Amino acid sequence: MARMKFVCDAERCIECNACVTACKNEHEVPWGVNRRRVVTLNDGLPGEKSISVACMHCSDAPCMAVCPVNCFYRTDEGVVLHDKDVCIGCGYCSYACPFGAPQFPSNGTFGVRGKMDKCTFCAGGPEAHGSQAEWEKYGRNRLAEGKLPACAEMCSTKALLGGDGDVIADIFRTRVVARGKGAEVWGWGTAYGSSQAGQPSEAAKSEAKS
Amino acid sequence: MTRLLVLIALAAGLAACSEPSQDLRSGHAIQDDPAWQGTGSNFVASDWTPGDQRNWEQALKVRLQRGQNEYNRVR
Image 1: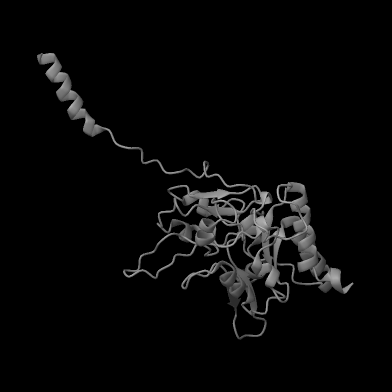
Image 2: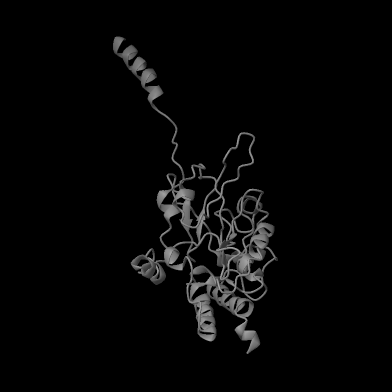
């Protein structure tokens, strides 16, 4: 069984925002909601790094744990989805998520928050695959069309990889071995579990000592 | 007669205690069809058969290697 994962190669991301545009275009995501964003660290300084961030479809998803109405569910492929008919828009998931994935439209007259919206790994929602209702609530269901997420497939430098975790891990490993650097996969440990997750880096430890 | 009246009064009074179910669908009960069943439309990738799980998984792996692993193209 495939386990769907995202990974962003910070050595390759050029902050072009093609992934953001591809996502918004593919699902016609409304204004004010960005299911995917590009975050740049140390912007403008030598050695700046950019990563594309969206829902990481965590193995032990905090959003699922805190949702008071239990609107989240996980598919057989490990994709974390939610039911907008059940969501009450409380916003707990946005506080719990370490990646800022849950988004809330705020275009109502009185700033009504509305139903939560987030990356679906292009897998739609609980409505019938390819139905109008699924399209209107969650966007296109590319997985059920035999395709992979639009953001990853559109990435010009192939920094963003999305698909079966085993395959993208192999692809990333090949790159790291070939170039001899850049093995850090940001967010991977937090999302998918690791003994090193949440631990300070070696650089931070050495800084603390000095 | 008095007993009947008491029963009627009790039934009428307790009727207000009932309320319709307000249960929400639980996350464990949310049903979603597997992605490999397809969308039923013709707007799908052509290299797999909707309804065949192994075929779908294999097609996605091939698509991933072809589309996202440029080392396959440059070698």
